[in-house]
Image 1: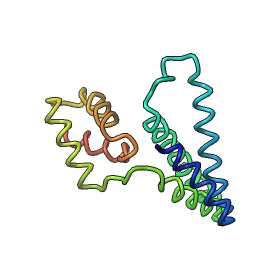
Image 2: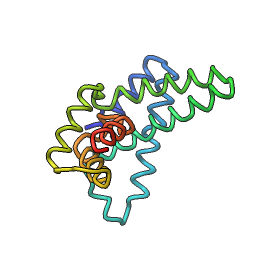
Image 3: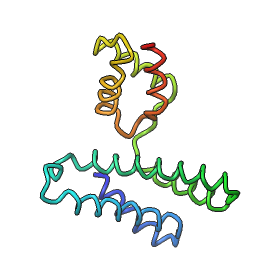
Length: 151
């Protein structure tokens, strides 16, 4: 279970006195706890735990990529490096990311499976990809691939 892995990683980082990893894992755990609190009393409370954690981790990586872009444009390279370090740590807990060829193959399979023929089917294709490959795929790349196939 990912929560257990994160807790163990936090303890290991404490023992190793790895401040960067410790702070990043604590941020992850705080985001998960915040999500748990927000989900109380809603229908989302019974969602698969690992899937929820993977979704949170994916969002954190995306936020950091956006921050890196902003920091580099502002000339704050030291902050951009810090964000890159955090991405590396967060990705340790995510499933292996698909490469370009794997993304293309998955897109081909979804288009064939759904019988998608035009641009109006992009939403259905992306929904199917997100359901099957959450946390494993860069959906921006997949969207471009699907759009190229259907246009």
